[in-house]
Image 1 (tube, helix red, strand yellow):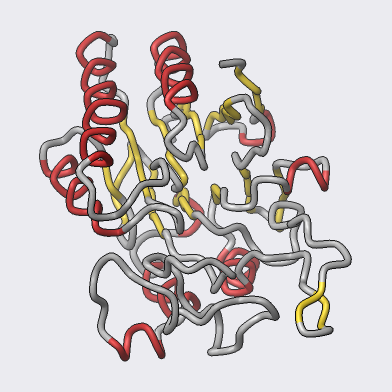
Image 2 (cartoon, one colour):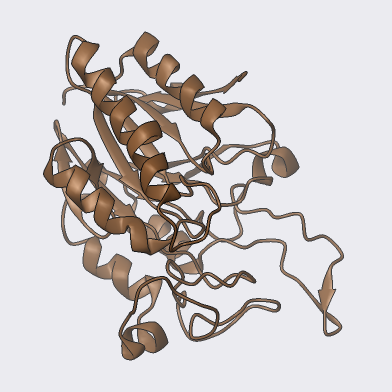
Length: 286
């Protein structure tokens, strides 16, 4: 199979200095593909036009500038994360149709000899924005989590979809799109009870019940162990690498990487598809 050289970042949260450092890094490295693992946008009121301007100026325009100057086009694969208001998803659909980015939430696309599948949803969190939250394997809620049926959304969603659809069901459907051993999965949530989903919740209680320090998805964990995809990419839990000392983990034949980072730097993961064991993480000063 043809090797492809890639960069993975996640949870940039609209930090302009991080974006500037990232695009300089891309310009220098000129990889084949860039993967954005969600939580791309700054916090702003979902009905303002400021985020539309931000997306155009600091993301799409910079991507177009990169591809106007590099020797060969770079593929930019994106999903949104649970902090990104879904009302702006249409902008990513339009950028995809204009061949600026490849927006991969809930679909599978080809990438050389490989495939890329994207999935934004995370299990229920304590936060109020519910655009990108789903029940995980059942309607069970962890201690401290707010139901997907509560909180608020920036776009309407079918009531039955909110109440009954699970991450497990979505992954079962999406996994039929391409051979697992040739597919890179771009998730926002990490797998449950792993080195990649460890949150700083030690000793914390709610209504006298302890909070689970692992906040990833059971469905994603089971999917990885059962289907054994080539590679899975994750973000969401910023402090996990600091707490566990690990940003990568192997589940059988599957490599899993997290680009989440809770320091001031930009965390960049570089990998080649022909030797995932040699993947590296770099903290780029802003």
